[in-house]
Image 1 (tube, rainbow, N blue to C red):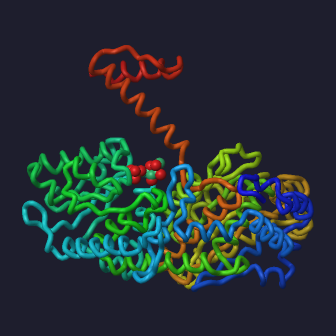
Image 2 (cartoon, helix red, strand yellow; image 1 turned 30 degrees about the vertical axis):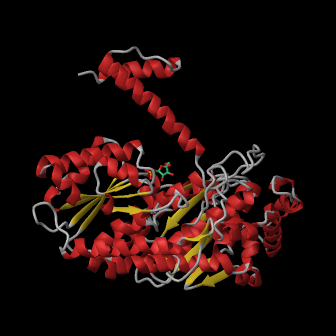
Image 3 (cartoon, rainbow, N blue to C red; image 1 turned 90 degrees about the vertical axis):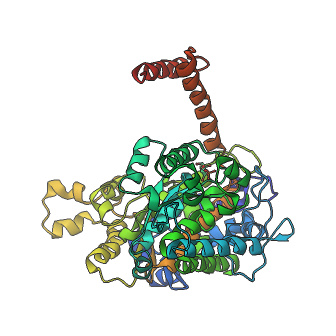
Length: 551
Ligand code: F6P
């Protein structure tokens, strides 16, 4: 395959298209009865167990997917990423979030320069700063310890840190280090989010961390100005230096905003926003809350998966297997959505984070060379912790036509048997369903048989694929592992689909249109200018809004 050819034009893709018919004829009940198959569909690495035996796939499917990976030059693309090549070609950037968690002595080059020492310089600065804040060596303007932190940021400057924070809150070791401290996240530009964040907090004991890669994001900058005002009004403008710090790649704008550059924590354009939780974006607020040592364990967990992803053979490589199976489900079996169902309340923010990582990365309509895609890339991710989800949307998953591959994520070592009973039961309920014969034997009245056979096409009940990821325990290290598995899975999908998973032009379009509207609102309110330059619908609704919100 030449670099600009589409993957759907290759023989392995065409072969898989033909193979779909065989698979659709084979029920999961039959596939699950083949112990040898099931055995080879369980893979373990560094304590994590992936069981993908409930995928609508045979060993032959796996071979064909390996051929597809070869045709897509997957290995070369992974190597190019780790080698710091500018694989984000539309933005002319390397993609090196793996460098953010690389051991201190490793070498990862970008443009011929080893970036690891720069990464560790910032990590050391965070360690030092967070220890000073936590110990009271760095105090607020009135001499009080800064025990509360508000992290302002949105998208990748928010979702990843929130996911990790939520997961660590219940980890006994991390929680011990967080005693007496609070970490809050301010993301939405809706003033209610500001009000909720500052409620109960005292500016004297609060540190505000402004997190923005660009330092231009409208929501974040407005919230940053609002909290700057909150601090200045209470403690005087000079207090900002003690109560506000920043994380950004744009240190010039940080300084312009009024934050001392010495109190700014840098990262680099080779870190994509949605892949930035392991940079100062996540490490600073999380270190302030839990201490640097805990966060270092999180980085080590992610790094362990990075090394595995880079070097393990594909048949044992967790992110590669997950990515290839996603492509199989989306592009061949036609399942457009994926439910992420962690059987662990601590992972309640996993799905919102993965929504961004996956959908902003792979929701693309053109190949990396700008050729319109004749196939779907990307999938819809959604989710809710089990068992809550079971009492919400599982009904549709059990019976609807567009069967959705699921990722159950539970803890292998767990003392909550009630929760884990569901974790183990649901995948089988989805895979096996019930046959009319079984139900009749159970004396189910005839008029309820179709309702209970979970059948959407008259042929089958059950046959809903899923896969399970089991963690040995939930702690900073395994949260890092989980994060990296999902990040690399998304990259694998994108590499095979032949798209650029690291830009987000659709989002940029929305941002520029919002700027136009903002300018119009300002001109109408301040100068009484008429609404113009928009279509009939937008003009009408804008006018209505201006009338309703006029003072
Ligand atoms: O949502 C779009 C996006 O560009 C994300 O990729 C990014 O994480 C987010 O905006 C926030 O951007 P910034 O960190 O520059 O404020």
